Image (cartoon, rainbow, N blue to C red; front, side, top):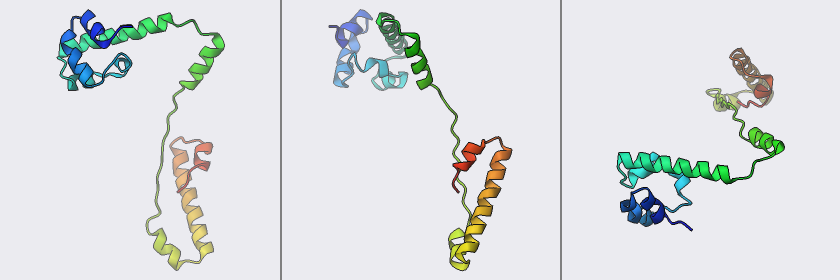
Length: 138
């Protein structure tokens, strides 16, 4: 099995082997390295680019070695990789704590409901869906 020393040696960058070993960077950690990590390890700019290109080649080789996935597996992984936009809205009724001490609980409930309705109306004007608004809590 190949070691990090062998891999760096094949790239002509064996001088970094001790640094990688001292920082516990082995072949398992390579796919997770970013340019900033290599910079932190003291790798020069040109050598960082060489290492990152070699890491990408390793990833390509590993994906070529894997058996082809079935259409069902591809559909599941594609669905799992779906990205969705998430917006979070925090709104506060300023002074509501003091108001709750002054108002009757039923009046406070009505005030809070009207406030939430007003916020929901504003959010709807900006394109939120009713599902998002029903889950909104202010």
